[in-house]
Image: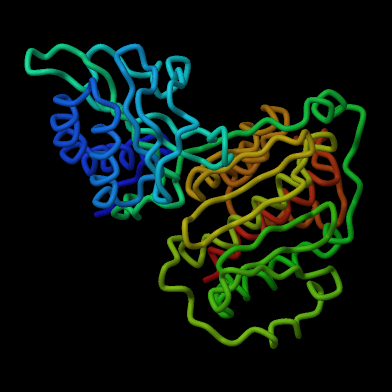
Length: 375
């Protein structure tokens, strides 16, 4: 079973694997160099010879024990003398070497000359008495490194990203404006659900405020398509996508797609100031993306998303989950009475503070719940 790792763990795993590839060759080379540290010409001849067997490296060079360069840079095109006598002691790949390190692999950095992502391996050079003579430096361009073995997938951790502070500070001076997508939300959700279940769409992002949906297809996963409102309200748009069985790599159960979309609706209408501007679902990795009017974004698994009540997002005053639970505990007959009142626009005596949008979300949820009992 494939384990899941955080981004930091993935990076560390790759660095550990790369260090393992370099360890023995660098150890052997520094042993050979230790006998000729006082002879620049011999050092450069030896580095030039060994460079042919050092695949993927960009530069080879030797530093003294003060990190001053005592050779030219040896490159694939020959010797570059411009770096001789260069003091590298202030470079991060030197400052990162601890007293206990024999081999140190630097963090990735942008090279000074070519402005390319690079890393440097530094291996200490000792004499036979284990006295530090200097350092061997090996620069690598990240583009030229060999592809390492594939590692585990990234863990599906809940991530929250804060947006523009200017937008957040003005959140209570703005209100949601009813978009065209809001007016056709049920039909649009049904259309996208059909495309995901039966037409090979594995990722969809709803842009509620601008009334469009961005979709990715299993037939062409490297491109995306934008469906405008006119296309979203025309069921014939399904005909332009070939029939496909539900994607075999999907991790989201089919029945959960509708639940996710229903929750998108609730987040869109639950509050006039803080509301959902965009929401996405990827049925392959099971991830949900949310962007709110405060410009805050959340990324989480669909399970974590569905397990959160509205009180998590907006506070207890807007917790429709607790209202739904209270109503459902009264029995089916009374639930149907609540549905009738809500559909007729009659105010609920025990929940008089519900907004129009909350009432819409409440009746939709109650209808969905009772539909389950019909089957």
